[in-house]
Image (cartoon, rainbow, N blue to C red; front, side):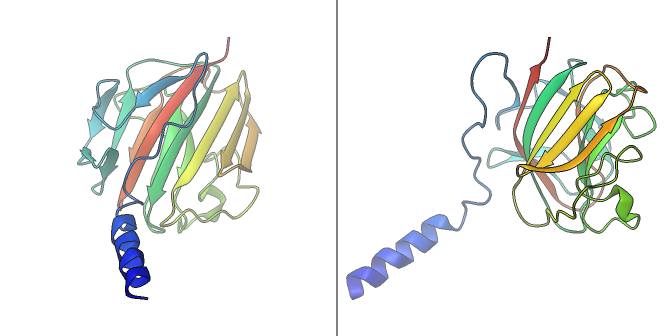
Length: 197
């Protein structure tokens, strides 16, 4: 019995940090490019006032408002990333941004991560001001796998495999992608993209 208790206590101690440790990269194969691998911000430009830093292989910030903006631009693509945020935090992934110095919904698209947003039409899982969420998906305090697909005017967003938004919109055709910190603690890991030609 003592041996079992000792083994269980060691297991629990060892699992305490699991939620912060980066998981294995999600996608492999032709075309996938890793934008953030937990080691550096070499493929990104920082803009705004967020306190971005790398902790335990995660990109995180808890001060608004700022973005990590990709150095490359993308038109048709698939993107996959893992996001962790508190229910009251405001994070998200922006894409096809036309002003990399000041990304936002006024010059690009945003897949929002914000469970408690006052306007629930733009809450977690929506493409803000373009597509309301199809389901109520709460991402607070869990790792959420975000998948965005944009081909021509058609866009879809999935959170942990659930389709949360789909839209057809022609305002923005190409631009960088960005990770957002707009209030509260947000974390990102395993950010990957594949261009569709």
